[in-house]
Image 1 (cartoon, rainbow, N blue to C red):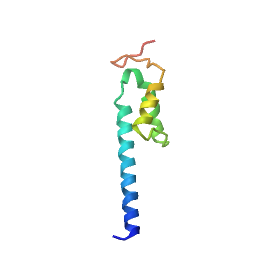
Image 2: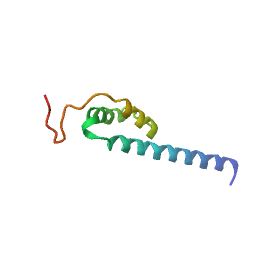
Image 3: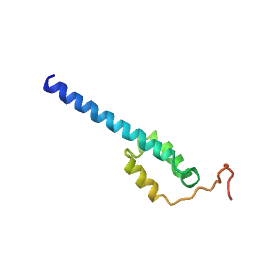
Image 4: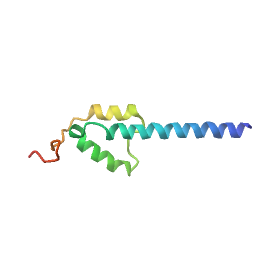
Length: 81
């Protein structure tokens, strides 16, 4: 294996690791408390299309920990006015 192939393999591994981390960060947020984070999750689902989503579990955890809006819906989806 020449030097170029080794670099390419390292780059491939790096991209694969980043992709896996991003996948888990998305699952982490989507799996969060739907009652507490409903609005945030909806906003983030829309932001995925804009490529504006936490890329690591640490970033996702930070976003959730700083979220202070409460969903206005109860567990069965009825609005609490």
